[in-house]
Length: 249
Ligand code: 13P
Image (tube, rainbow, N blue to C red; front, side, top):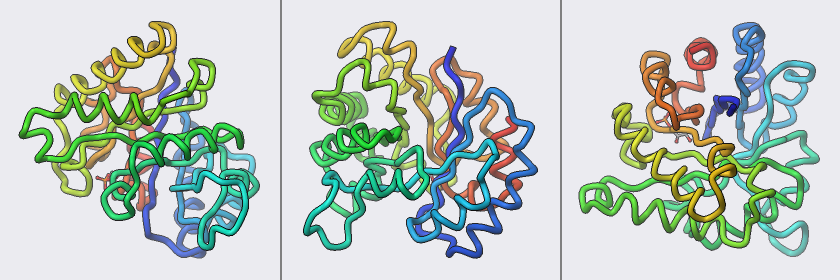
């Protein structure tokens, strides 16, 4: 039985006071949600403000990125151990915006996941094809390399601390959600791939979230599909009522 995860990726929004206000408004709206893991991912500088507010609640804290070294002369980077120290249990790794704008590759994603594992963080590994790749019928090839290379050298036991988020790039911030069928097809493929790379029990246990224009109106349909175990939400996570509407699907 896989516990669903609803995670809010706040991206580059919300300074400390706004982040604290958002989570303060969210807490009472989701306090009765049972059988669902709730995660919010503010910017680094707002982590501590949110951490103070969520103490003793059912909301968990995530960072949006990390580096793969624990310390050293790497100006501007943040180590997984520091993220853990800041109160996070989760970290988003390999978001398509980082792949697109900041040169992340499957190789750097793999290093980051390994470093996050060492620090005791749960990784939200983001994968997904662009529109051009989908139109060229390369979706499954892209997903195969993102999963295979992203998880290279990671054991089945370690996979318990990894959540995969399938986010088709063409559905992010566009209002154009993948249909329930398109999402299910990709999720089933990813789960099959995990079975091929590891084993069936590992594949049955891993949570695979869908991301890309998830809203209270479309979450139910997505969640009714057998291989969709939750959502990674961008825009709709920036308002307490819409994020709560997704959590309480
Ligand atoms: P939107 O929900 O705004 O499409 O963003 C999805 C996403 O990128 C979450 O990581």
